[in-house]
Amino acid sequence: MATKPFNMIVVRHGEGFHNLGTHTKNELEFTSDDRPKTINSSLTKKGLLQANLVAERLKDTAFDLAITSDLKRATQTAEAIKKSNDSIKQLVTWPLVRERCLGDFEGVQEVCKALRIVENAVSDRDYLTWRPPNGESVQDLRQRITSFLQEVQKAALNIPGDSPSILVSTHGLFKDALYYVI
Image (cartoon, rainbow, N blue to C red; front, top):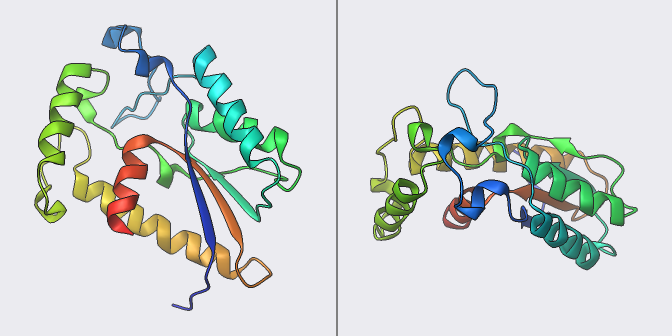
């Protein structure tokens, strides 16, 4: 595959309702996917303020491509950036940059925290193949990120110029795993 250098700015969404930790699983909004269902909460007032702050910081950065997760909180963050940035003509929705799906554990704060503690204690990420019921393992997410990087490279090849700039509005676990993959 041909390659081309590109700059990528990765933004985590602002605070979402699910981040408050004051909810029960039944109070959360999920995607309408058959399986696996993923939390699909909107930004809180604080999250909207955070999205506007990052938008202000990036208002003068020229972007050739703006990618967002299809989940509400990432899309709201990307929309705030687009509103402040004249270089962004459209947002392209890529489900590949969705948050890691924790399956049956989605929305169960204590279990998700415990899972992250255990996974963060494992230095060799290749061992993280255990998959929560109806969810993704760390390795599944890494494979999805590898596919994302291949797709973003293809997109960069089609953008005029030597080193296009690409915005990605995504999620914390995706961003963390992206760091390990890169």
